[in-house]
Amino acid sequence: MDLLEAIILGIIQGLTEFLPVSSSGHLELAKAILGNNSVPQESLTFTVVLHFATALSTLVYFRAEVLQIFKGLFQFKWNEETQFSVKIILSMIPAVIIGLLFEEQLESFFGGKIFLVGMMLLVTALLLLLADKAKSTDKNVSFTNSVIIGVSQAIAMLPGISRSGATISTSVLLGIDRTKAARFSFLMVVPLIFGKIAKDILGGDLNFQSSEIVAISAGFVAAFVSGLFACSWMIALVKKSKLSYFSIYCAVVGLIAIIYSLTN
Image (cartoon, rainbow, N blue to C red; front, side, top):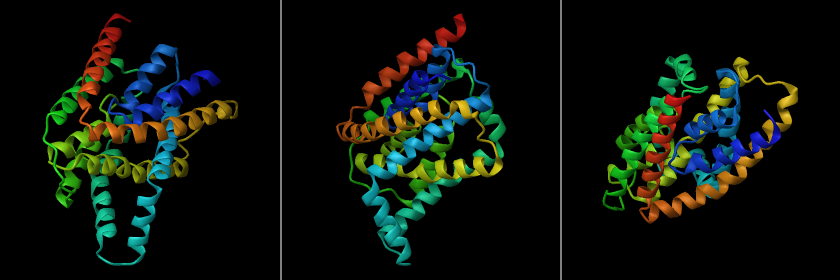
């Protein structure tokens, strides 16, 4: 992987992690278009590094909220911050279970499965269209809601299903305030990403050659910077109920991906 290719993939990851268009799906499409021939394990390693960059950008953007959560936890009181933390933990459970039990199967979906990406993008398009038509409310995320949203996050482990799109759409369809839905969606994935990286490092799964460090670092920086921009942009868009535009985009890209996979 050369430097320019890594930067392009990093920018794609940063933008699409927060925009509801599937970052993993776009990375797979970009790799196919750029001619990246990485084996699934190498492809997954680079994907994990880029996800770490966007998780870090989430922490930076929501640093005030994250600090409040930690303060609440260490007060050992059943306050709003503690309850929010418990909801985040509940939302993680479905993805953790699926990730641990079906890790090999999930990894097999990466590495050029363009037809699958296209089909899942069509599913994302449908979810966004339904969410865009839902009524706006001021409802908070409940404990039950957090589990249901967590199931959506687990399903979004498939490339082509937008994690932010699935979780925000599910939240909105459950009647949750759009801004609160976006905030919860972005924060709920951070512990999972850091947990995944810790597991891979301890297990020796994140392996790459020293010659790739510069390219991977460049991709990391590109994903982090573009992630900061996309995070703030997405929150503004969700407030204005503009998800239908992304629905159309996902449908178009999904159809192109399906046609590409059938003709190549």
